Length: 158
Image (cartoon, rainbow, N blue to C red; front, side, top):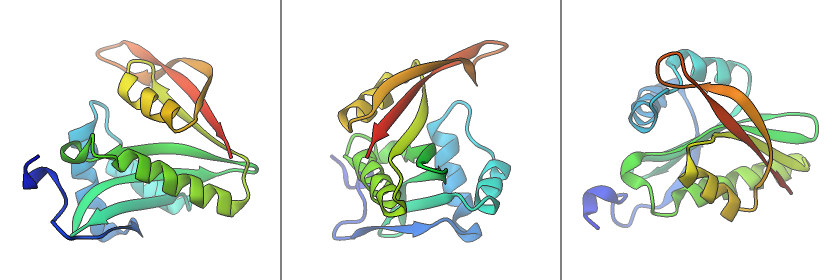
């Protein structure tokens, strides 16, 4: 694999909270990863709401991030993204492990998420991580044109 597709050699990966100074870098990743990306306003609203937004960074490069909301006995994963150039390198597992660690620290019992029915790769990652398919939300996601796409609801008991 070329060096351009890996974090800076010898750089240690770590987590840091999203700040306004990092928002443009996050938006660039979001827009490169999704056909229907979150907007700047979505991320600013998530920050204002006090949601957990953690960036995974190595050598100054943004590898990925997650956005999660704490509920009563649960955490709801709202967004998880690995930058396209760093996909298939195990970073999604690192993000999910960090999410589970944070959730356990809150004393919650469940992590919930929705994933596009067509996103087979993400569904496989979640299943490999122990998430179970527990429901379906019809026409949950925007699609092409006037079309909508179903979401698979998944949960992980901690």
